Length: 315
Image (cartoon, rainbow, N blue to C red):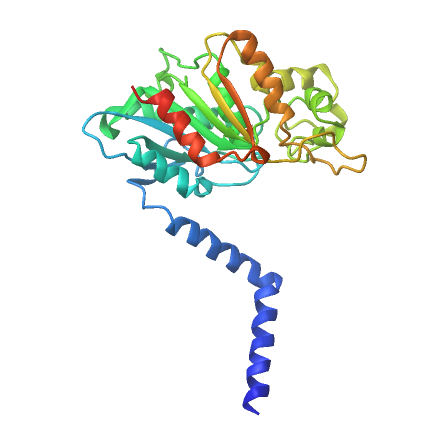
């Protein structure tokens, strides 16, 4: 009888663990374990803007003199994700090298559309510069990192002209948005569906995060091939803002190389290494350092990113 009761308990436990109702709990537990792997930030959920998602976490590197800062911008297709995605290994490596780290949230689609995601992230960088003295940060040495949407955002801010507005009534917006370097993962150097189709394939250009009224651009699908939409695509493409004085980049990829299969699903290829190759092609022409790495080469993303930041942010 006891064996039968034990078996029943085990079966019931397995059912509960695999049921849809248990999924949120399991997700929360995984998130909790990830958070526990990182030390508590010196500042948690510090507000850098008016929206509820305009919050940041800051880890201050221990140093007697102002430290560089690396800003982590999360991925998630501009419609999901959070600052908790920051890699514990990268955080530990940067802090060990006396580089402070800031992880941010930003507004998401479909509530907002381009350029709101970018501008929130830029504002967080400006907010850090405004508080540089109190945070023991060197405002001249700020880098950015992130995956996917966070990578594309990092590139866009890094290549865009400085958005500081010296006459703005908001002291945050008077600060510089310029970056010293970017280490990115799965980066899209353009979100222009026309570029994506040429560089990777039509399936990648049909990623649901980009298309439709609820997507990144907020453009209804029937208006996706109009002059108005084209202007948005061109403005949102980081590679279109690239000039000779822009900062160096290291970009990591792990999606399979080669052409997409004929039956590729919508969105497949959105992290293709061709985005990196196209970026490197343009940066090489301008004489700017650009390193493209793939996991099939044995790339160690966290370690190499830390080394890259040390080389470009440490005096």
